Amino acid sequence: MSENIYITETTIEGDEDGPLAGRTVAVKDNISTEGVRTTCGSAMLEEYVPPYDGTVIERLKAAGATIPGKTNMDEFGMGTTTETSAFGSTDNPAAPGHVPGGSSGGSAAAVAAGEADLALGTDTGGSVRCPAAFCGVVGIKPTYGLVSRYGLIAYANSLEQIGPLAPSVEEAAELLEVIAGPDERDGTTRDATDHGSDYEYAEAADGDVDGLEIGVPTELLDGADDRVVDQFWNAIDDLEARGASYHEVSLPSLEHAVEAYYVIAMSEASSNLARFDGVRYGTSGGYDGNWNEAFAAAREEGFGEEVKRRILLGTYALSAGYHDKYYKKAQDARAWIQQDFDEALSEADVLASPTMPVTPFELGESLDDPMKMYLADANTTPVNLANLPAISVPVGDDPGLPVGLQLVGPAFGEKRLIRAGSALA
Image (tube, rainbow, N blue to C red; front, side):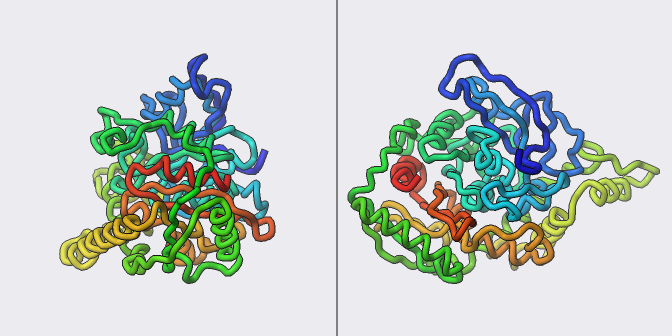
């Protein structure tokens, strides 16, 4: 077994019959599983055992899937390498000695290593697509609202979605069919049929890209490693040979996407993680008559450095006197990004870019430089800000270091992405 893929190994049996009967689906450790501990990769929740299943877990069981364990992840989803986990880092089975990406690195590694047939991750700013690219597998970030977040321990509510990881586009589509659909327990879910789609995703994996018009945002190629860009254009050539065509587009707002993303995500995180105070949830800080000191002690002990950094920055961005300067401006930038995507997709069926501008870091390489980690998210974060669907498909190695191609579609355009992606994987 590749190193440290699972935080908790277990066997959660599904129904005897169903579309996923006989298949294993590893689950990221921030999705609630009744009676099985769910840690979010944090010492704060090391002993937390949820009393209920998340909606996607109920749907997996009903589909006949077996869950072999809860996978390693960056603490509370905060990271791009799965190295901020309190349970140690995960090696990349597709590129040993390198990170598997994050924050869903354990889920991608489980699929890449053959430790599970399929896996679920969560994507707040690229956390399904990044590890898919780094581990040479397929990852889908669904349209916001397509998949229920009930039972997901939140990092940033307005950005994150649960999505599938799989060896092929068709298998990822089969898993998406099982987990997608509205849920009365999550008011943010929407019915795809109200938006001109249906849930027959797997049948779309026919590889037919004849007549497909691809927009290539130049901003998402600028600054990418030459080796990554070469693999990207090779993949575009493959799509052209199958009947697709491309044109370059400009999305000037993307220059501000990383800054806007981190202000919004960290602000939502500072609010969401306030519940981990040693009283309602988390390790106890002890109590000697001063609640504030007990609260601070619990958080000091339970949270890792990256989580503390993001909580502090988010609290600062929301504080009196700075809300308009940072948070409001980030939301204005988000609206601009959404507008740019809508305009680009009015003249293209899909947009294409490298999933990650770099190949997988060596283990330990980015831990001392958070900015390096943040900037690596430049190609994935805009999609979450725009609430759009995206897929990452493997398109080669450089050498031995996997590279992914990202396709972005209009809201509820998953079938279009699956059709295009299946031409490559």
